Length: 270
Image (cartoon, rainbow, N blue to C red):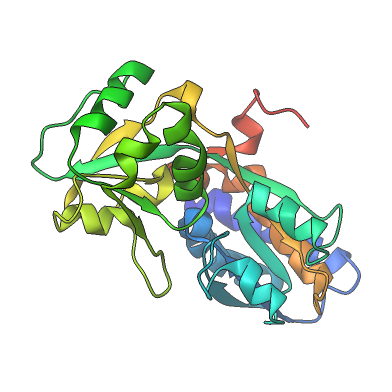
C-alpha cells in the first residue's frame, strides 16, 4: 500500500469509526493473537490506532495446545480479551465452548504450512507427495510447532503418509512465542534438520532457507480468523478492528507476510 492510498484509507476509516455508534470515544481494546497472523497485525495496528483513537493492548499465545500461554487456556482462566485472532478451527472450538460470540467470526487470511532447512544446506525436493514422504523418512530430525500446524502434522499428516512411527522418535515439538521461538530458529541453530510451520512464521527468520510450501494436496486449508469474545468490554471497537484487518486495503500487507487475502482466494466460499 502506498503512503497516499494508506492516508486515503485512514481518512475513510476515521469517518467510518465516527459514524458507528459507540466508537467515537477512545477505548482500550484487548487483543489475543497467535503467531501466524502477528506480523500483519503488527504492521497494520498503528494505522488502526491512529484512525480510531483506540489503543490496542496485545497478548500473544498459540492457537491451541497445552501451553499455559495458549489462547484457549488464557480465556478459560478469565484473562481479559475483547477480540481473538487465531487459527480458524480454534475459533470454532472457542465458539462451541461459549468463549467467543457465535456469529462474530471474520476470516482474515488463508495460510499454508511450509518447510525450512538450515542456511547452506541442500534444498530438498518436496514437490510431490512421494518426494515429501521420502524426505520425512530420510532426515535425521524434524521440528514442528506446538500450535495449529504442528498439531496437524503430528496427529494427522504423518499418519496419513504412513510415517508416524518412523517420524515420532526423531521429532521435536517447539514451543512458540511469547516464551518460546519460531521453529525456524531451532533449524537455524542446527538442532533439527528440517522444520515446519505456517509460511508466514518461516519466511523472515535468519539462518534458514525457505524450501517452500508442502504439497497442495497435503495442506490442511488453514485460515486465520478473528472473533469477539463473550466477555468483551469493547465489542464495537473489536468489530471495527476485525473489519479493518479484513478490508481490501490490508491485502498487500497480508500477501507480503506469506498469507493469502480472503478476497483473492476464490476457492474459498462461505
